[in-house]
Amino acid sequence: MLVAMVLAVTFAMPQSIEDLTAILSGTPELTVTEPESGFPVIEVQTPVSAATIALHGAQVLTWAPTDHPPVLYVSPKAKMNEGKALRGGIPICWPWFGNHPDDPEMPAHGFARTRFWELVSGEMVGKMATLVFKLVSDEETKALFPFDFELTATIRVADKLRVKLNMKNTGEEIYKVSSALHTYLSLGDIERIQLEGVKGSHYIDQASDDKEPVYQEKNLQIKGEVDRIYQSMSSVLIRDLDRYRSVFVDKAGSRSTVIWNPWKEKSKTLADLPDKAYKEFVCVECANAGTDKPTLRPNGSHTLETVIGLRPLS
Image (cartoon, rainbow, N blue to C red; front, side, top):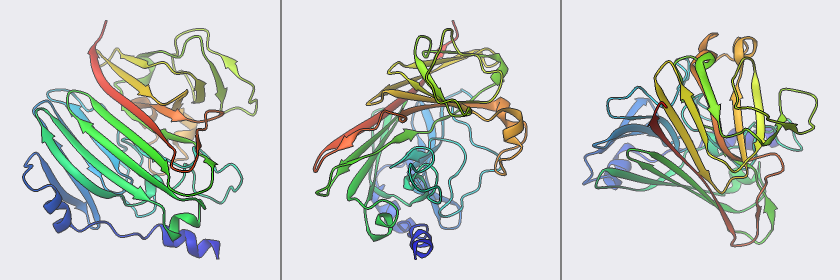
């Protein structure tokens, strides 16, 4: 019975191209395309940057300031498959991060990233485009998560990229959630970056059997597989020596930061990632993970937000 319900979750229909076009009418900077049948994507072109956002998962796929290389990484092997996560961009992990806490048969990172969201609005004001998406509980989501909710993803595209996830308890029961904005950042060469912002904090090493907190003594340089949940409220700065730029990741509503890179051996086990692609990205995730799990009371809400942008390399 559970299998049948899980399959039902993955086959929700997106809004039609006609409906999406009507919502965005009057904003020529926001256009609807369908790069793969049944998977609408909104292309955003502002005076200062460009982005693409999929209705599947309300997932930002690409973002780049004008005259700059892409800031987000998308695997060249990534495919849009209904009910499957697309590797790259900014997947929204909710209502749990990582494996389900009790049931290993449940989908990793929850179901928000593999559902079609509803586009509510899109507007262009000055140099900033703002798009709002919603996902609400129904019988299908309750097969996986037996609570009422309303998620609102507000995405602002300008000289910075802002992604805000508001999660609201619309039911009568109290529950906890974990979540992440699973940001894939594009790099010149992962062995030539310096990652600042986690020094002086503790982390749980998800790639190790030892789950005792470890103290981060220095700025992070990645020389092997990294899968860590840092107990940190700080922003992160990635100094990319190959591209001669720095990428910053600011955040709010988060007491944990996830840093992930599969490195050589694990990359070979991931079908949707080229073997050597580990050199081209690092995930820096604004999260509520580990012990950082907000409690949502009836009519209560919590907001998780990340802001991404570029700075000159110093």
